Image (cartoon, rainbow, N blue to C red; front, side, top):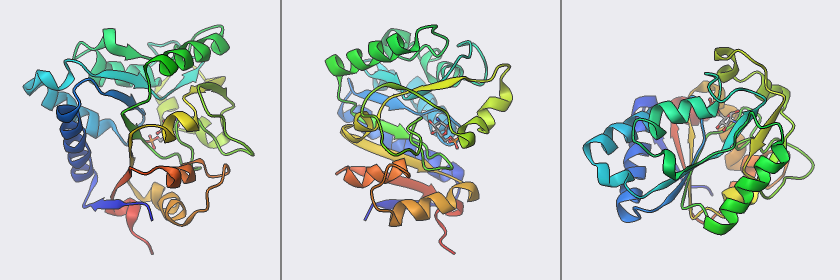
Length: 239
Ligand code: GLP
């Protein structure tokens, strides 16, 4: 059974996740931290940035790697994962020298995936992996499929992903995704999956009861020995 902690609301969930990350960064200051973007971890990152401003040693040595990115968008488009991570953590905390990220606007996305995969091969594994949950069970852009890819790759975006609210803030439509693979996630030393709101309730229930199957990529978290699910009540309430 996946270990799940349920918090009263989004604020409490975000505080608990930020506290967990803070504790882990104190214990392992040079941790490689993988970051999902999207609305769910936004509150966690805001609190982590506030704590790091009070306690600069928290992020003095850590390295950050972006989990995934929309392909075909300029990296200053407000819809991008880049925009969110740069504005909430990377730039305010001065971490750009220790930030590894897909350039989603690359004309040669295969080369971009190979660059990130090589970097991770040399510098991995990920120590702390922060994930959100797609409404179709995706992790990053590891979309439901007959088979999942282990490492960084170009993803064909699902119809669900193309309706993601992030894209409403942007100017362009993505043509593909770039994402770390399911093995990169499962090989992370520790994983924390965050889920908030009614919209994730069905997926959390499915995750807790699922067999391991590529048609529901989050189910691969059952293979991980140190995964944590942090949910708010809206996401975790089983009717
Ligand atoms: C997006 C991203 C994921 C993210 C997920 C959930 O499409 N590819 O990295 O974790 O969907 O996003 P949200 O937290 O906004 O619901």
